[in-house]
Length: 519
Image (cartoon, rainbow, N blue to C red; front, side):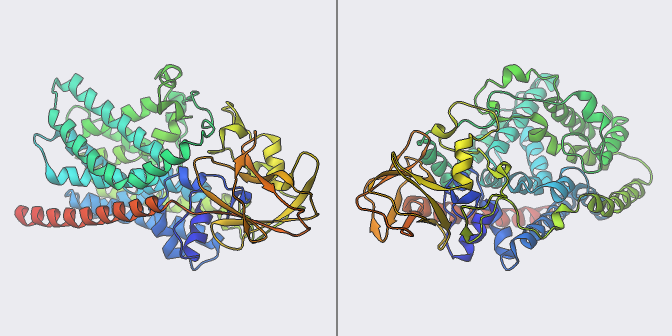
């Protein structure tokens, strides 16, 4: 996805819904089904680098953005600047943030992670608000917009957390806050307008009947013992060393300080949602939740923030010294972690990228670089395991045009963004042939054979494109498959981003007015 967006911007284009520049030029609808708008700024500012260096630069920029947003958010909520600085360091260089830098790049989830602290403060505020709050509604809508621009499943995760905390307050405090519901509802309406292009493209592509997600209906979880007993500095699905230590220290103040109690209860809710104490085998049958796959992947990334916030409210002497020492430990651990996980600095080309000349005779390719995400349903069937059928792998690595009587290897070439060119390696007779490009029936393609437009495009029984050659196809004939986004989508995209920018400006104005009133 990152590579396709990069190529789109280099071509001065809006990223298309299907991937021709990566994943073997098969036209898989990964771009369209994964929200990617929050990734665009990171790619734009690093697009002058080589792709491998760009990935490293994006990781560094994300770390920097996480630090800045965390620090500013803490200072704006009246925490001491020195302590805010140390907590921002701890949040960036431990837990999921450090894991992402070392092991992978999940741009959707990590973009949301940048705004964890503003999100926590806003959720806390909306749960306890005694009124209809215009500024809060706008702030929540902007944060929800970032979530929907980044990762749709995270929106479901955040919704689960909000609902859980709201119900807990009703049970524990015997208070039914209708203003919470009203503020959240109004914020959601605003968010809908921001997210129209994302929802539209999901709707259109889904009309093609795509394969069910990997593991749909089978939701796994982690044992409670593991969550506490594997405190790595760069933990992903368990409490990091720092989060666990601050959690234990803060427990001493549980029930003595309302803020600490709230945050620790929230942390316990997240821990429970990661664990097998929740009957996920039953809840995993519910819509949307059935796509969680493994709950620590969804909820575990938020395990670090609340213990840090709880600790900031404690009345421990030398609190800043404790934070300072922990910051030094976390920073000292980074070089060692980098030396053990130096794969991010390798300069070899990433396996999922296809070069400008995609060759059919590349026998060294690894079948593992094929992913099943959002393939046509005909390709996968009803399977929910992670495998891609061998026939799809063969067509990806050894592309051919295939007819009832004849077939020919083809050479794939990406000459222009948003299209793929196929050159047959031997002559074939006229007739109906399947070409090695996925077909989504709800999308509109254009196909040209030696410059002449093909009028009829269909899909075969395996989800690939099927076209008819009316004449003998000479060797090295050029077949071009082109996909452009609908004009309506482009209009929605411009409108939604304009609305989002306008609301940001409006929020800044509200925030400035509120700041003057406080002063």
